[in-house]
Image (cartoon, rainbow, N blue to C red; front, side):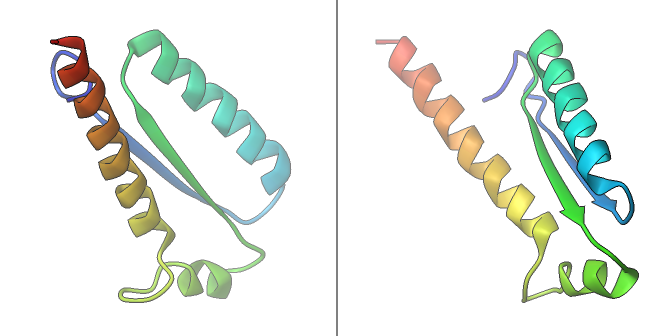
Length: 89
């Protein structure tokens, strides 16, 4: 379980220029939204120099940063469920 309504969000972005600054600000903004809404948000950012690198990092059955974000979300849901069940004791 996540929040009362069961919401869980994944934000996946691909940045190809000025990615240091944009990624830092993205992380800060998404963290603030997550804190203020009490909704967990998994934030995945692919930083690339070109479209080929982005493609290489999103292969089905291979390196796939989107799938990595989904796996992180599923693991986080498991932790939330454990905490929820432990609090019922």
